[in-house]
Figure (cartoon, rainbow, N blue to C red):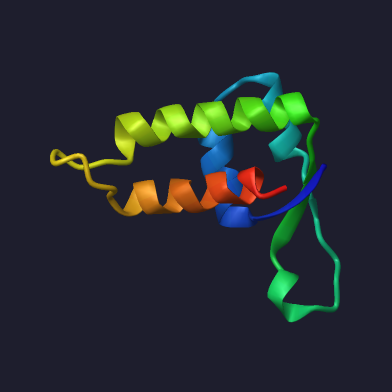
Length: 91
């Protein structure tokens, strides 16, 4: 499955996945070359269903540990992670 991910989000995903093989998939993503201005600066990442599940699991774990404040509400990182997770969940 192909996903178009913003460069800023790619960097966050790579940092969360750290040195895993899956992180290298995101590191090697190619910039999308499309004439549509709304897609500029996005990168194409091709993932299998198993890889998507693994990414969602890793991002969800990180969301629970670092994406909420002391009251259990989403902080700014949590909202960003939620948006990224939604990208992978809608395909």
